[in-house]
Length: 213
Image (cartoon, rainbow, N blue to C red; front, side, top):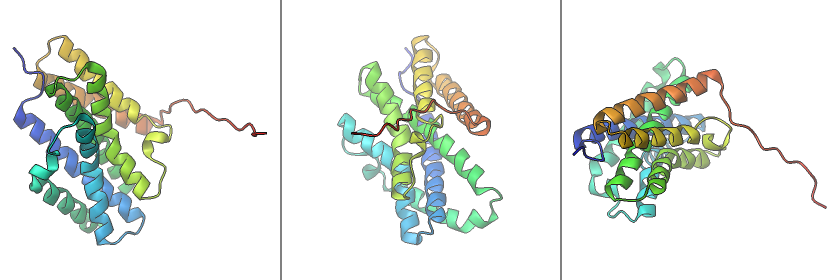
């Protein structure tokens, strides 16, 4: 019988890509706010590992993942600090930031689903686990950088995370091999996010201006 979660090697590879990408996106966000090196390291760490930390606390999954793998801490801080060195050689930082953030969003969403599936949570909790893992690091990054989080600015962001989780679970229900399912869901989610960015796709906005008496 096919395992409900991706193989350990595939999941590990996706996780390393995700935390590296998100650490770099955090460092770029810190750079736009003219933070010092310590600030860059903190924002890189929070962006890369904050979503998974909140997920683990929510699901009651202890010990929290990165506390058992200090190499992840070294990796994300190193990626953040390295970004400060190579940033001047990047032609379009905004485009790089958005691509890195999109990769992290999709990868973390899949990882969040896999964690909840492994713990035998019901479907709605699996989806919420994926979304928490996918979007919370970016929310923490934007709040600490004094920006309105991307997820609240009409862009297809949280909805991409939701779509990735739904696609992953749907293909799983159809009996698709889990590693193939993961690859398809990652590719589809990343494509959707990038198309939304470049096409300017937006969610409807609720605007209410009536004066309170």
